Length: 412
Image (cartoon, rainbow, N blue to C red; front, side, top):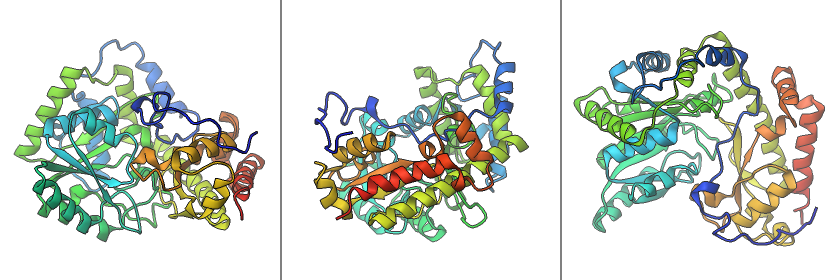
């Protein structure tokens, strides 16, 4: 395999186009048999869900949120075929420009631009991603309004892609207080909330607990409950007159765009949201497995001299290879786009660069997924899930050895 970065791609080929955006990190595990059985039993259903979802899904979502300290009424819930379509409908219904943390999930900014709105990225605190620095947020809002902009919404996450961090409660509270003082409505993407690696050590709060009248909560079920191929998501609106208005307008957009959940998928979604033992145990075990592998990969990065925040949630980590710039330059790598190509080819797995997440292209940052480190196929990955000590399995060790070897190529 060549040690150079290879030929440059053109913008028309791959760089910057929405259709080439990286997918969310996948668990890499076989579908839970219980969910497959539920979907199979509903396969004869030919009709989709009504706009916003049927009773079963919305009631199951109420139970899901109640178990997390957010009492919810079915009339304050809507479902859609995945978080992107649901977020697009919600932002289209609310109106105004949107503020986001930098970095942020790769799919957020295209949603806003597709609506013809402006997206303003705000730096995150040094300790975590997912939320903006409160002082930077207030300054950005002041500047945007002075320039004639119309910021109305703050989009954030309490368990973050790409940084794999969870904002400490005090930082989330400060960001929410800043949003409230600036008159912003908060949309909290909590899709990764239940992928926290150590749930008994990491406290995850929701803006809806702090701003009950000014926050909506979005959950993509592919985060921890359903496979990505069964798209379904739910959103919780404030239980206020304005929340009722926003839900009604969101349903109008879902209806106009035909963004309806498939009938069989709705049955599986309702079952997963009820969190029977098998579903809950799989989610917990998968989060613990990815946490163990992410911690091991984080160690390899630090030993090699790279930077990365300790991963707390998700199936990924966000690595800053800027300290290894000299070694990367020997391989023809000078920016995040070239790093994406070179590192992905060396590891044999997608490693999207920081430019995908609204980060600076000059910063040598990438998101590394832990799914490919679990093994080469469903059998090996299921063995990793069931192992008492997955890091001792030969195929997991081989994956980590490969990462270590690639990083060693960059040593001075």
